[in-house]
Image (cartoon, rainbow, N blue to C red; front, side, top):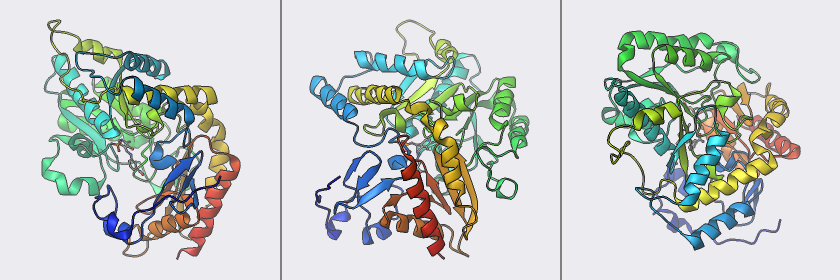
Length: 445
Ligand code: PXG
């Protein structure tokens, strides 16, 4: 594809944008800019092609520049750019909720719309508390999260999350009464596992210990990512999630799966709960819902939770919660077009078909110097590098930058390189990602 140069900002023009989760000074001294995208590729402003190994930021599951989404968005913008959903409604919001309910795990057919993963998480936590209160258990306000968990950046999300850097500055302002399960990453036992690790199911039993400590009657919900993305791809040991489900059931504690990354085909089924055959009570989503084209999130709820809240006088608002842009019509249009693409191209199950090939590709990195673990599931892969002495993350950062310079975009978190390519990926592109990574890791001392 011929790429016309697109003007890039001059160095002095980079200052005003305070960039999120970015080393601003380092970036602005040596920026990496993207100007255009199509299919599996980005192009830099000067026209250099970059193969997208991370679906943007785990969201562009159907690949870039999808005409159907552009057209649906343009049509909706010119028909009705905005309509309120507080005490009002618009048709495609209901249509989208119905379409999502059809894809959802059993019983999860009540959908609350948000604008991001962070908002979905805070929404799910609030629904959990409201549900217990409606059941006469208003004292159930505690949450159990997990170390290394990432649940976005709202105060609720960082409270249940377990990534130290997201928490340490805000410690005194977080939700009270939150506790955390141990994470499940254990390189000593599980290094180079293909798919789910066999060791570690017993780590779920720690939930019983936390319940005994706090008493079940104080706990509203347990929230985990079925597999953790941001922490550097941490997989659930075989049987672990089922065990969490059993323990939650035993104590009437809700189980929330944060599927912001795993939702919409990333792991070979529409949702990870289907891939792992464990159904939560609430499920948070965002990202792939609109292929990243328009911000949108959705919380899927078991019908029993919705029904429990539908009480009181008929004119009472049952859940005091919502966003101006909940079910924004343009986002709904983008999501409907995205779901059509997923259905037409079989993308929500394509990661299952490609899984074995992807697994072989990423595990070919085993044996390269400094590679201490390789992890994979669905169309997710991760390579963990030995940290440089006293400089955690530095080696992986260098690998990330060099890959970008050689035209492959991956994601670095700590000493892990994570990959989650668009679900339309072809064999040659898998090979290119892995070969570039192998070459760069070999060169990076
Ligand atoms: N939950 C999970 C599981 C996530 O992965 C969020 C919530 C928050 O979503 P929003 O839309 O508020 O950002 C996320 C976001 C990375 C990376 O490379 C991952 C996310 C965001 C940015 C970078 O690991 N996940």
